[in-house]
Each structure stands twice: as structure tokens, then as C-alpha cells.
Length: 459
Image (cartoon, rainbow, N blue to C red; front, side, top):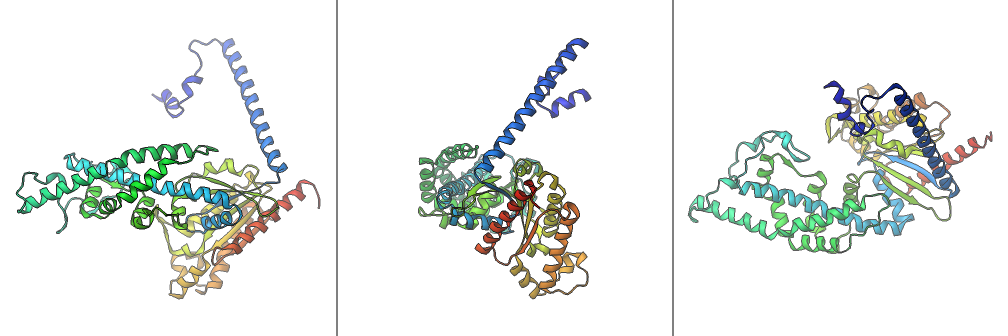
């Protein structure tokens, strides 16, 4: 059994397994061929990296990686930069984002319809939370009991009951859900078509347009708006989802709450909509040209909680790493892990990046400490920093002192990990706006200039 463990973990190991009854001379010959093949592969990889670097330098393209959670202001500044300096690409992405928003809604409706149909068919609910649909959910107190005034489980309703009796009322209610299922049956096909487009669009350099699939989804959501709102707000449906351990995706719940706006045929994604979309579509790449000057390629890494190894390819040949940290999160917890303080998680992320800086040399770091205005309002309401940040001690609960303390804390981590030779810019930002964009532009260019001078051995 132990010998099979490696092959279970490595799906391609079976193809690399040495032939049975291999002689010593055959083994030596095979290992020589494998070593030569690996050497050729490494040479090709090195040539490709060099070629990409040469092309990028010949185009004068700067490369910057942006990291930060959804509340740090990172997404907002990227959107503002693109709206101002890459309006054509921005308009094209608005169309794509509107399609993704509609897809999220359709997927949520299909999930609800599946649960509703299972309940009407009398299928047993899963006994373990491990069977949760999609993201899963935790046990709810009302899973085992029904509060007064809520519709009973639909599968227990008697279809032959007398209409004027309470049970007869249940039969009428059951018929109502059947009608909703019939009216929304077209959603499955539309969701499937739009999902095929989305799967194709996320491929590298894909330019697949949504076309009629987007128009079909838009018209269907507008036509079925009231039925969708009914399903998303109905207490009996919510009870069924809890009983069956089904949790809708967070972004889908956000969009369903604002269905009246999104169902409009003139709908354009808002900044909040885009933030919810981008948080679930992985690493994004944007190229922005500031007038006639040097263009910058921005890589939006996304959530700070994603797998760290996914960042590595985007750090290759990078000119600057931009990290966004919201200081106002000092007393908040991560939604995905309530045990972890948001500011503590950001500091851990910063320490990880600085500790891995050998991958980035001779690049530079730019740290944006955002949310200073929100921090100020929290302290004014009497929130004590020391209650959430024990290391703050008995220092004054003053915004200026708090920001200076946290700034020095992040700066000390950077200096300890990367030393004095690395260019480090730290900006304190109240509101993320075009002034922040100016800091990004000047900071990246300053780091690139220092990098060029160092490579040219100019003192």
C-alpha cells in the first residue's frame, strides 16, 4: 500500500514508472536520456523567460503586481486607472462583467430550483454537512424545527387535501411552487449556454464574445424577475436550503438582494458589482498606458487568502510589488476565518512577501495603508486599538499615533526581511482616488529607474 501512495498523489507517475525487470544497463541508459531531456527542457524554459523579458523591455513595459483583500481599496484604484487610461478595454470588460453577474444569478436560481424540486419529490435531505451543495453551510437552529408562520416542508403537504382546510391550503401552496418551477424551466438552458461562454472566456488571451447568450440571459432575468425575487426571499425556500445544507455563493446573494437594478435592460455593473465579480475570477492582467509615456502592466493578484504558490509566475521580472492594507480592519475578523484578525492577516501577508523577496530582486515594494478615514471615525466612537492589537499597549488612542505605530510596524518587517538596499515606498491613504493613482505611477517609475541604474552599474 505504501508503494502506491506516490502514484495516487502523482497522477502521471504511472507513465514515468521504470519498466519491470529493467536491467542495470537499461536503467543507466534510461536515466541518461531523462537527464538530457530535462536539460533541454530547462534550456527552453530559460530561453522563453529571457525572450519574454527582452520583449517586455523592448516595449518599455513596466510590470507591477498588486496584492490586497477586497476591502483594501485595491480594486477601486485599478478600476479608476482603467477608466481613465484604458477606456476601450474598460468598456469591453463592463460587458463581460455584466454577463458574469447574470451568470451568478442564474446559477443561484438553478441551485434553488434543484433543492425545491428535490423537496417536492420527497427526496431525503443529506444527513451530514459534508454533503453541502456548492460552498456548504453550517447547521442552522431551525433546520430541525419550523417556526410559527413558516410554510411546512413541501414534501409533507397533502396534495389531496381539502382547499378550505389548513391542509388544503398546503396543497395550494405546493401547487404554487410547481407553477414557479414550470415558469423558470428555461433558466437551466440559458445558464448552461452562458456558463459555456464563461468557461471559454477565462482561457488565456480568449476574446470569445458573449453575443446572443448575454442578450438571452438579460431578457430572461427581466421577464422572470418577480419569480426570482420570490424564490430568493421566500421563507419556506430558505428553510429548505438550510435543511439540505445548501449555501448560495456570497456574490450571488449580493446580486439577488439588488435584483431590481440588475434586471434592468440598461444595467451597468457598479463598482461593488465588479468587486464581487473580480474576487471570484482569479488573477487579472491589465495593461495601462499613461499618455505617451512608459506603459505599465498590472497584475491583480486578488484575495490575500489565496494559495501563495499561484503568485510565483507573476513575480518573474516584476518591477514593483504593490500591497494594499486597510488599517480600519484592526478590529475586524476575516469572513472566511472568524478566528483571524484582518489586520493581523495583512501583516502576515506582508511578512510572507518580504520574506520571499529573493524572488523579486532587484524590484521594489510599495505599501498603501488605506482606510485612515474609517480608522479615525472608529477611534472617535471610542473603539480602543489595544483591545484588538495587544502590542499597541497603553499608547494614546489617537489616529495620528495609531497610524504612525502601524506604519513603523510594517516598515520594521520589511527592513528586517529585505534590508536597506530595497526601495520601499509607504503611503498613508484616507480615500482611494486618483491621488493614489499618482503615487502608484511615480512609485513604480522611481523603482524602475533605480533598477535600471543598478543594472547599468551607475553609482
